Every structure is written in C-alpha cells, then in structure tokens.
Length: 268
Image (cartoon, rainbow, N blue to C red; front, side, top):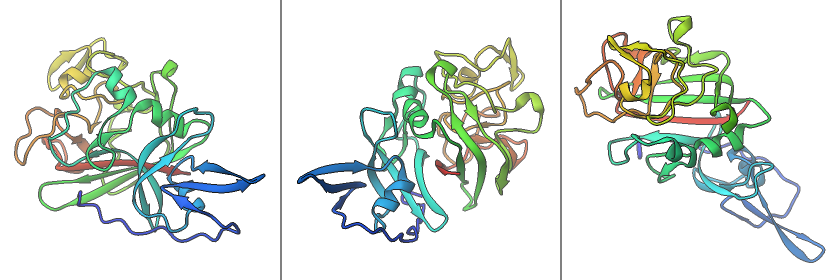
C-alpha cells in the first residue's frame, strides 16, 4: 500500500471523437474556439480518455462551479474515485468539522477528500462504496456497499448505504440494529450527530463518540462497529476498543487497529 495498492488499468472505451486529453480534460473545437470538458468523476474520465491511468485527475461534478483534483484508481473492476487513504501516522485525522468538510492531506498519499466534495460527486444518484483494509500480518480484505451516497450539509452529510458484500465483514451495519451507522450524520470532536444521550463506548458513557474513538470524524451511531479515521497506531498498539483504524467485524471482538485503509466509490 502506497505504494501498497497495485492498480490495474481500466478497459479501454472507443470514442468517435478526436480528443486532446490532459489529466481528465478534453479540448473540443466549437465554432473555432477550444472548449474544455471535465469529467464528473473518475469513471467519466476513463470514457473521455480511454488511456487514463491511476493518479491525480481534475473533475467537475454537475452543478458545481469550481473543479477540484481527486485520485483515480483505474482498475479492471471499474474506475474508482478515492476519498480516504491511510498508510501511517504522518497525517493527523484528529480534525474538526471544518477540516473534514473541506478535506486535508495530499490526494496522492494519505488524505480525506472532504465531505462537501463527496456530496458533490454522489448527489443525485447511487454509488458503490468500497472499503479496503490491510493488517500488520500481510492480510487484506474488502467491503462493498451498493447504493452509497452522502447527504448535504443540511443533513450533516448523512451516510446512506445498501447491501453489503465482501470479505471484511459488515462493519457499517454492525452486529446490532442499534449500532448501524447507516442513515446517521457525520460526527467530529466539535460537531456531534451520533445520537448518543449518552452511549456506552468501551464501558465509558459518552455523548460524543468521536472523543472516545480517537477524535477522528465518522458516521457514528451508538459509536458502532467501524471507525477508520481515528488515531493511527503501530503494530500491537491497540488502546481501547476502537480508538484507531477500527473495523470490528474482521478481527472479532479484540481491539485491533489496522495498518492501512482506503475508501473509494464508483457509479452503481
């Protein structure tokens, strides 16, 4: 993983256009003047430019005035837009609401793309969310959720996911109905939307799960079974039940903080 992920190229798509392409942009001559066309996500970039490879690309979701850069993972199973990556402790995820809304880190390395950008990409249609986890023993697993999208800021960037498939276990829906993180808003250490009044996290009563789970932002509900934005811990250092990079279903009930994670989306 970073390099630890080993992407493969997307299948090439034939376009009946003569295109001049640069990082997901197309220049099309219209009435003698070139017009720049940007992809709305990584999948559309691959259609505009069939030879596009994994890396930084510029996108402009529909209805958004300003374009921005994302990391695209071009694979045989689709062209994925990465919105979270963790490979170590160099980038702190112990951030406030404003930082999680805007995004932080470097797109080509450890980063959080930003809740506003994630909403801009996913609004109006359903997506597939893919979560990838790496442990310290060389194991890798994944979880996929159909029907993913994120609500607007008025809905506190509420998480919506559908059916689960994969090898990591269903960390988002969790083992108990009351711990499901589906349909909950995003919570940070300074903005609480987890519904706890209070909740019991690691035998401690808390009104804000972020404060008990490493101060990272997440879609908490009753603190829940997943939290991948907590404090990064080295091998063997797993204080508490979910203070680190936590996905309860893979490693069972024992505390375990993962070595690396990645979250990405593609159109359903």
